[in-house]
Image 1: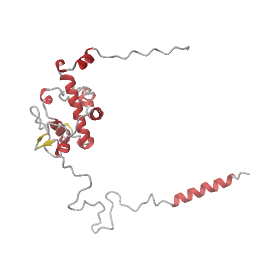
Image 2 (image 1 turned 90 degrees about the vertical axis):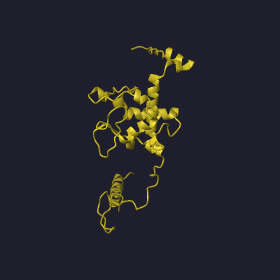
Image 3 (image 1 turned 60 degrees about the vertical axis):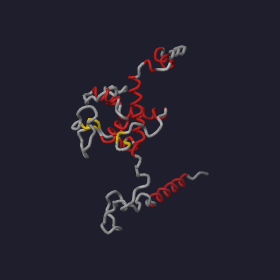
Image 4 (image 1 turned 120 degrees about the horizontal axis):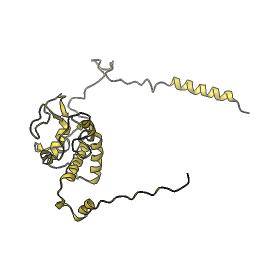
Length: 223
C-alpha cells in the first residue's frame, strides 16, 4: 500500500537540510574591494608580492607579443602560416574586423555604410607593402586620427587616448589570434592583387572555369 504522506515528509526533510547547508553560499572569502581584518591595513585586495610575476604572464617573445624584431616592425610571422591558422584568422576577422573593413577588406563594411569613417582598403599601396609587424602594432596600440598623417604615421603613441580611428584590439583578440588575423588579411590582399601570370595552371583553370554545384532536384510527391 502506497503512503503518499511519506513522500511529503521526505521532500520537506531534503529542503530543510538543503537550507541549513548554506556554507557554500556564504563562503569564507573576500569579495572584490571588501575590507579584511586579516591584514594590518584592512585592505582585502592585495598587490602581487614584490619581485614576483604570475605564472604564464611573462611575455619575453617580442615577435609574438610586440610585433617587433631588433626594435623594428617584424617582417615575418612568429609561426608557420597554415590552412588552420588562416581559417582561425578568418573567424577572428569576421568577428572583429569585417563590420568596418568589409568582407574583402575594401573598407565598406556595414558600419561604414551607416556613417562610420571609412578605413583605407587593404589593397592601398602603402598597406600592401607594410610589414606584418605594422598591422600587429595597429591592433596592439590603435591608430589615432590625431597622429595620422601620411601613409603609416598614425600609430597611437599616447596612453589614454580615445580619438581612435582604429581601436586597440590585442587584449580582446590575443596575440596568437591577432597574428592569425593578419595572415588572413595578407590572404585578402593577395587574392585581389596577384597577377594572373603568377598563377599555376591549376589555379588559373579554377579562376577561369569556376565549378558550380548543380541545383538539387525538387523532391517529387503529392500535395
